[in-house]
Image (tube, rainbow, N blue to C red):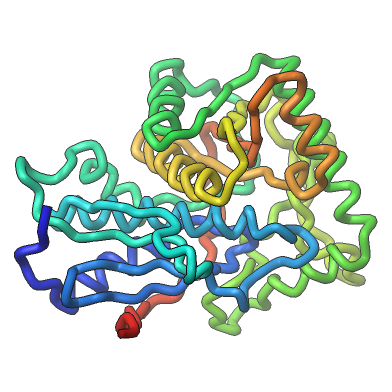
Length: 328
């Protein structure tokens, strides 16, 4: 497949606007984009300035975030009539070049499965508010599971005892984070004050309230700040969560898991299902191993909490992304 149409500035803006709408840990948006206009290839690089050395020392969460941006690029490209062809880690001599997306002319029309998710890209965002507890129908859950599988990952939806076990491990990770001054400071550094207009990080209105019953281990972004008391709400009694995992734990697997994450979230959004991400247990090696449990060849990446409820506050994004010309 070869590109036969020029990629104009309007298309580039549409692609990158979709890409930066992807979720990222602490809304760090740890990506950079370049465009090779001669070949119609978008290059996606890691931004080493937007890392979390304590919470994410191996950069696995950064790769998940970049993978989610790649999926949004693919969705937007398909919507524009291209056939997006992805190569992960294409150049061993450029470790920060995590993916390329070739905008190829489709032989028989753009992939309908991806293009159909385009409307959900702009609507998807994390809701850290309590959900109603009304269960998501099995048919929708099956579509979410299939979305993760289509990208080379797995989404397991446990029963109530299994869910409680995963939430206990997540709560243990959150308790360790709160007790660790360095991690608390690292997280707090990404909280932005209202009215600052900073397009990164977590604005205070988007920070999760406290759960009065302690059932839901939502991340505490602020730590013990004097004078700041987050609202206390009653979260759902029986949460629905999905464990996203891959069979192996290589860098390319992290990128595939990120694409699986975003495809799953977009499917949920298209059905009116709210989602949030629980990552705390993955930030401690022993807890991550405990999440995997006795299974063989299971590398867990995060929990997706899903259900029905309020939208919650949106996190900011870079509004005017620019593609840097590729070198050479």
